[in-house]
Length: 154
Image 1 (cartoon, rainbow, N blue to C red):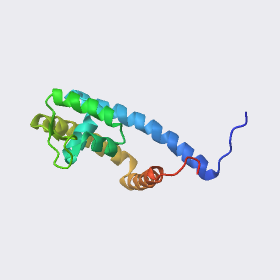
Image 2 (image 1 turned 90 degrees about the vertical axis):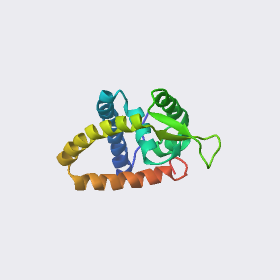
Image 3 (image 1 turned 180 degrees about the vertical axis):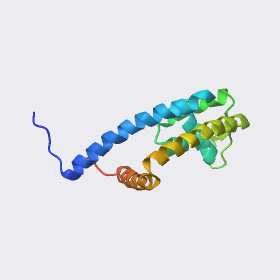
Image 4 (image 1 turned 60 degrees about the horizontal axis):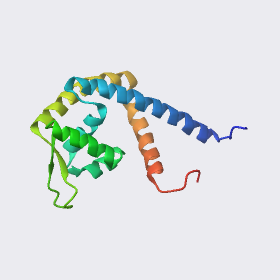
């Protein structure tokens, strides 16, 4: 079977996509290492961080993080059992409670963020802040394209 041909832009995007997938795996592993001393994982850290930024429901956190609501709900329930988050009434929606950090949750998140700041400073200096900003702009444009409703291949 003959391999389909792509344009130069299609090849560039495909190589970029593979690099991003590989990067995501490395970032998850690094996140797990940064969160582990606080008894957490990357996934739990993401939910804690999202809950610290704004009053959001589990579904809203899932949308922001690009994760399934059910997965976020499972993590949020575990974090609640550990006393790191609590559910509060949502004036905008009776059934969709807001996820809020407890004082203990704030402490755990701050501990992880301290480790992450040192790691990010070191890696950012090694790569170059301007290059990272340009890459972020490119990723943002691609995310906007991928988020726009259109048929695949169109």
